[in-house]
Amino acid sequence: MKIFYSLIILSILYNVNEVQAEKVYFSSRDGLRITAEYYKIHADTVPLIILFHQAGWSRGEYLEIAPRLNQLGFNCLAVDLRSGKTVNNVDNETFLEAKKKMKETNYLAAETDIISSLEYALNIAGGKVILWGSSYSASLALRVAAQYQEDISAVIAFSPGEYFRSFGKPTDFISTSVSNLEIATFITCAKREKENCEIIYNSIPSKNKTIFIPDSPGNHGSSALWNIQYDSKEYWKAVESFLESIK
Image 1 (tube, rainbow, N blue to C red):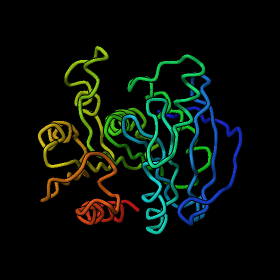
Image 2: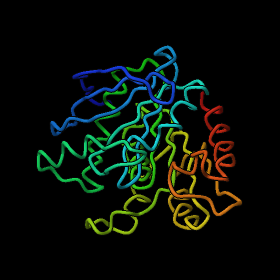
Image 3: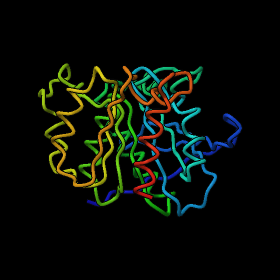
């Protein structure tokens, strides 16, 4: 299924962790302005990873992760979804805009932002596009990947789960959504989340899928990769191995 590409509205250059990031704005399908940071140090033809944050957070979740992914040979787009707030002193500007426009800011409402981010990424990238989600956005990234497999080469999900029951969705909402997912898939989580993640993982028919459960207790979401986490090296080793396999 091909999708309609979005247009950039504005871009501003500034430094984040010594990597030059371009602050970009583009429109979601319902007209909401989305804020993101474009970590581009390579040619357009290298793979582009779209990074989505966990609940209550912002694109700030990827301040130290995106530059490392740059070093591994990827460009990155870290996106503020409308469901979130602040992390690492980075406010979620899409959330603030959504509140101003009196739009819904729950988990499900953010799905349109993920699809719109994919549209935008396909407009600026000349190579492969990879979706990467954290917590609730990991679940939505898997769901969107299953819908738009023609446009995506892989999906990475940190701590996906069935987080949508309070929004009227069935307990197997995500597991059912990924029942046709055939592209390369990487799933990881904290050890305590293993059972829930394995249910989703086992629902994916892809022949190229990987699940990583750490020997340590681990951590929730993409923050498992932060240097402050004593076991982050375990996660990075697994992620790097997967990324190398799909380059």
